[in-house]
Image (cartoon, rainbow, N blue to C red; front, side, top):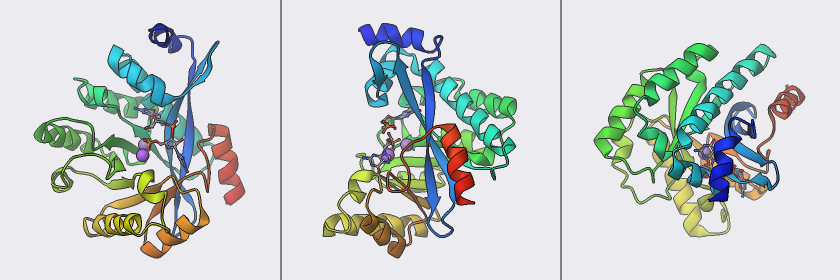
Length: 253
Ligand code: G
Ligand code: G
Ligand code: MN
Ligand code: NA
């Protein structure tokens, strides 16, 4: 309850900021995209993690203005990197369930793209399978978002209870394999089988595939051999500040 009150003031007090985690293209070794991750620096409690405050923000409705702030900040940052001379990097932004039910979500995204002048092909929105919305409603919404020219990714893929049938309905571009599957490769044969199957399925469906939570070189080798397109994880980089993204990029190129 106390946190909820503080959350309401946090936006106005500029207590939120975004870190960005690179996604590395395994074929070229370059950073082609980054995932924006929101952080809250509480004035007295210090760092409050998003898995604590996002659910509270969902419950109290603050997710709508916060979600808008996150999207606008991420798109603005992508333009700043472009102006700094970095080749345009895709920025991935997590949507939360409450935002899917936001009446003016599509208009809001369009408006932010226009104001920030970000090329829509460089924005990717991440949804998860556990976002319970009627499949027809979700299909319709995703088509409207896709019509803006943006990309859609399914985050935490494989952890929801949804059937695979939505993969042929939804206009999606990318699957992000949840890190719980990647954690035990290459030591657990069941996880190996699942990861290989997801990569192969993504390829047949012509979707990009990102493996999340890569911490070990062994995991990386397994994914390279398996033909995975992109990795995201501590092995390459933790989520870092915009300035650190600029510096990392300049070191690499
Ligand atoms: O960054 P970290 O691993 O602490 O994130 C924990 C959880 O919070 C993850 O499930 C992540 O999806 C969620 N999260 C982080 N940043 C955002 C954000 O900007 N928007 C939403 N909706 N969720 C986020
Ligand atoms: O749910 P979502 O995939 O959006 O959450 C991404 C979260 O995963 C971020 O909070 C990020 O900090 C975390 N993360 C990213 N890479 C790694 C990793 O290699 N290991 C672990 N344990 N967490 C990671
Ligand atoms: Mn994500
Ligand atoms: Na995930």
